[in-house]
Length: 293
Image 1: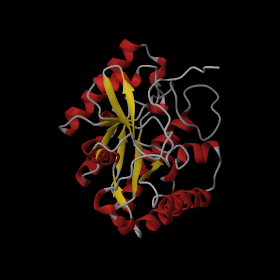
Image 2 (image 1 turned 60 degrees about the horizontal axis):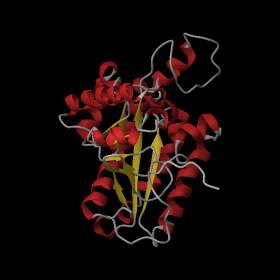
Image 3 (image 1 turned 45 degrees about the vertical axis):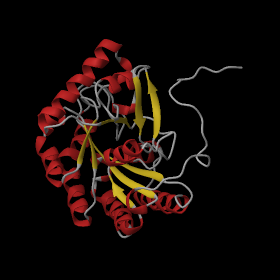
């Protein structure tokens, strides 16, 4: 029996690959993926704190907006205090609504990564022509604001059409974060070449962990710490990537932030044992040294 397949990459076990190191002989690369998202009022998609009974959905819209108005600034204070770098996944709509937020991360030297126009839409809902236009519009906004084109992309809702990797590679992107099937960067085939898939977490991620799985703040913190410690041990055998996905409207809530601080302090205390970095730096190291399978 032959099952339908994407044809983007083949199978190779994590235990059967060439070995390599991250810079300075480190074995575990750790990055924080901080999602800056803006949503349409009265329409479109959005995570929900409580059931919506029609539009306008003021409760859930305002809850998400808390992340941009308050939560992200509290998180920024902790990142500054612990000297943690960030990979900032930015909806292009943020530049119209609250550009001060991106300004703050740019001033820190953090990586700015494409994250569509808004999380009120999914790329898979577009035909190829409109999806190409979506990517071009978001890329132009980030390029003009940052003075350089973004190198990486995470689709809103991690939603792809059957041609998304092709379109992103053709638009000049070097890596994508949508494919979560590995703990190492891998090459994804495209119709005009290839694009690197850098691991992005779907377990160490506050969106599924909190609204979907209903983890408590302390449980989510334990999840991060336990995943970190286990991957640190596993990385003795293979170089690995651990991403931590965070959304300010979730973990920027004070009672959750109180617990998240413990996880961030735990990782920061072991910075000499790991490579604290960004997705773009991971991609560059792998591409420049031809390490990926």
